[in-house]
Image 1 (tube, one colour):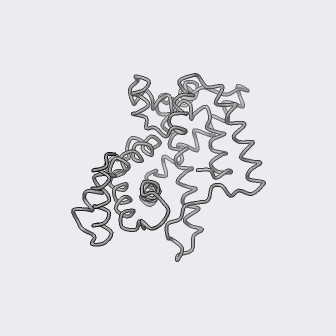
Image 2 (cartoon, rainbow, N blue to C red):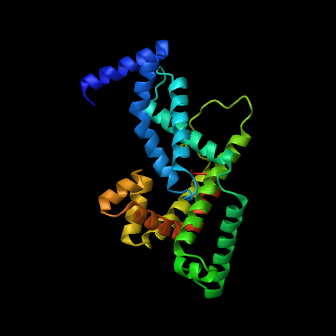
Length: 260
């Protein structure tokens, strides 16, 4: 960012904080809309196709405006960080309240996991998405999408439990202290991370790379596709296949470890 751009942004913040100047607010919204787009792309990677990207974007923009309204510049916190929590939280909360995943889809995900377990017990090994698809008379893409839905529904369920535990008068914005863990949590997390690391090493090169870029480098599927010279849909397939292979460990890590 150039010195002039920085001065212009500081002027916008000054006008917005002191006077709630509409033009300054519009300028800040335009500046941080790419941040909304980023979170929409990442969250949408786990949603079924029937969920409108425009609806997710609308929720994200609402979260951005909420962040602009409530942000306190005097706090030792960057706006990007604060806004990211607000944007993501608003999207997740909106999805949960709208019940984006109908009962039929929830039953479908449960049935899929039950059938995978039965098939693995019968064959005495891990099964492939192709074998599951053939067993259930589904397409491989349907298997991948159902696994993604199951994965994301666990994230929404945890968010719901956290919100339900909050008292009515304690709904102000907080950032969870992820550094404070009990000895039991640390031991369990170390075991989970160790198991997950071993399982990831069993993935092929592309699957490992996509997971690393998506979860560690926090890139979107579109950005990863540009790096690997592959289409976004192809990157989505690789991502889904990796989640399928890691599904049991990931579900355990989300539900028991509470790391997301």
